[in-house]
Image 1: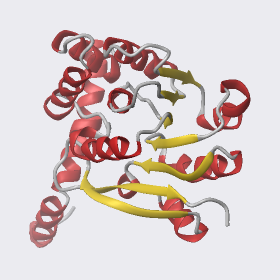
Image 2: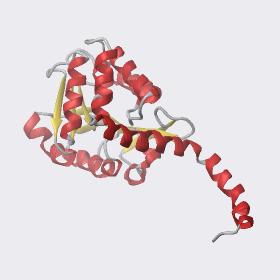
Image 3: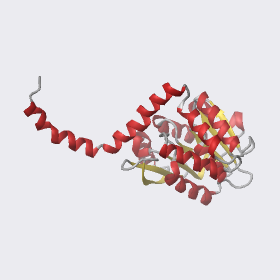
Image 4: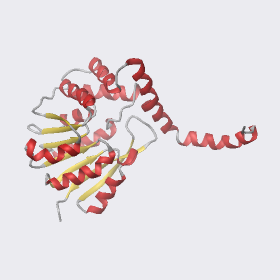
Length: 259
């Protein structure tokens, strides 16, 4: 049994750790504990609950209203790791500057970033969005159509990215990707980027944007882009979406072509 004196000696250390990592404790509470409790109580997945909220609070056919409802739910009700409004504005600006005609999204999740990208595309552009989880893809499909985007603008592909990327040219007729947005499993960032490099779909000036490269982090991805010499790149510093005090970043890469 620990004596009161020893317990008191460790109290300052415990308080220091709680204060230092308080934002991570809050994130754990919102992202894990609240989610688990509501999963049990409602019998619905977190993504299904988010969709119900958006369906009852957003204006159909209005992408801005869809995104606003999502942001309110994610910041005030439950946590979902979308790109969020702050980093989303950086993505919006890059899309407006690039005006890409062919866009690939890796990780649709429940459709937030898909809608954000689709609303910024020029007339005649097309977005190919890959989501491996069938339940999440079903929610994303509903969100995308609720926002007013049809199959001619957004094509949702339900399969793992490492199975789809090698078939983009043969099965989907793609010749070049102007813009790629990554927000799926962080461990997949590096191998998927290397697969895209080998596919010949990246051309000089193609842009790749990757979210959450600092938290939870994608060290192998960052190491690859540093060593490859294939990109001009930088990391936009930010905080984790719908959170305070947790540092994150979004990588912006411009493909220079094979040397």
